[in-house]
Image 1 (cartoon, helix red, strand yellow):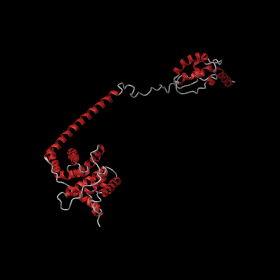
Image 2 (cartoon, rainbow over the protein chains, first blue to last red):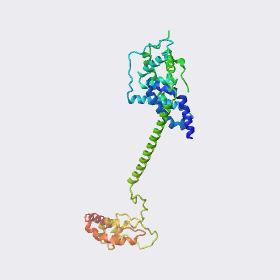
Image 3 (tube, rainbow over the protein chains, first blue to last red):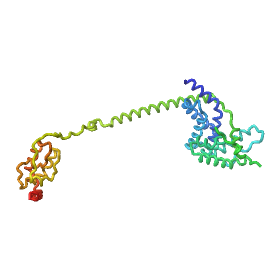
Image 4 (cartoon, each protein chain N blue to C red):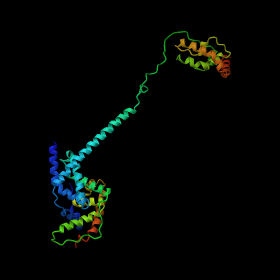
Length: 168
Length: 184
């Protein structure tokens, strides 16, 4: 019983660690240490809930824990996020560091959002969740989740406007 | 799971979604992650065990306090037996006191079938009887011809008739006038 539980849990963690870590990074605005802490806490909670949800949907459970914990920990203390006046320079096409630079710009832009808006944007555009499921994950009404996402995107539009050029 | 239709996205939103997806790094689940996760699970077990112990101790303490605060003497809370009814002898033929004209005015107390009402009615009735109407039989002041209880009415009324003139002189006038009116 315990061994099968450990096997299933270990298999899930090993298979989904990378994707969940990236989700945690986006939710906290790029802080890797904080993202790892959040993911560890979520996995510990998943271990104790594994007999209930291990066979059903462990990933939505972890996603909900991550999103809510990110918002809660952001309210609890300051994590050293500082808004910047200018974003890092854009990478040249074909540059090896282009991906790294783009990721850095994205994380800096996300770090400027309030936690609830950041979580709503990440869940909607990275996880492809509709407003209803975003609201369920965040534990708020649908209108509130939609408002958070639209305001977050509007703010990112201003921040990343020179990076993502409009079509035409 | 119903996902978004990306056709609803404008160019910026599609680029934003692409940036989020493309920025993903490959982060393997390393041994240090596993070690930290196991230590976290052990700490969680300790916390849960301690929480259960504290909860059990609080529950036991609460139950004990509840029992301590309960009243120990519960005699008063017992249901009482029904009150004893006055004994009635329904068909005992006996000498019933006859009503005299003197007693009827003082018989403002209507005759009641229960014998226990005799003593209680005599204080109001006896002033009239004792007031100059000279009713020789004190039991007649009872004015109640109960079918039973004739054995209980004599003594109390006798005593009350002896004491009532001294205790209630004001009522003698009214009873006297009423008695005279009836007798006349």
